Amino acid sequence: MEQILSGLVSRLQSAFGDGLTSVVLYGSATVGDWNESSSDLNILCVLKCLTPHELVQSEPVFRWWREQGNPPPLLMSAEEVRSCTDCFPMEFHDIKEHRRILQGSDIIRDLEIDRSFYRAQVEHELRVKQIRLRQKAAELFSRPQELLKLLVDSISTFCVLGRHALILSGHEPRWKKREIIAALEDVLRRPLDGANAILTVRSGPKPPRDANAALIFERYLSEINELVRFVDALDR
Image (cartoon, rainbow, N blue to C red):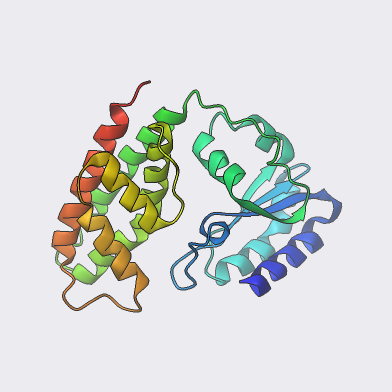
């Protein structure tokens, strides 16, 4: 991981020079929950200004980064970072809580997170993920391995949204996936067997032979539905 991060910073410096304000690592790699085979390296790249010229300069860097198996860096101008925390309170809350500055200044340190739309964003994201999960699963019940992969791919987002549900309801935030699921079990007063089964599949080199994808999906969807209802009932 360190070698890949060093390679990214070197390429970003070559591409943008003095126009590079900050390179920030965030996500699972900063909270001790990173898995080399299944986790991404999440990067916020902040530039002094962001025009089509900078986008052209970023192309070879982003292509190389994607070839390493990671999502493209989040590319923003310094002014955008300072002015859009009200639009992305979840994302900036997480980055502010856990981050590692790989290059440049800590532009995140003094940000004020506007919580006005925080609950609405969490509910919106949960409902969007719920709908998309159902849509994609509807095509995969005859292909259990692909259905299982869909569930594994979705669990990180479910845990992120679960963490923010905990924060919104006044509970201590958790950062590791198993800890988030355990805390949600206490808050929702029910076992989350589907989510736990997906984490077990995710942690191994290959799915267990006895993994019943359809049953896991049924339980997991019920758990997501319960979390949606929980967040919807929180004070607005």
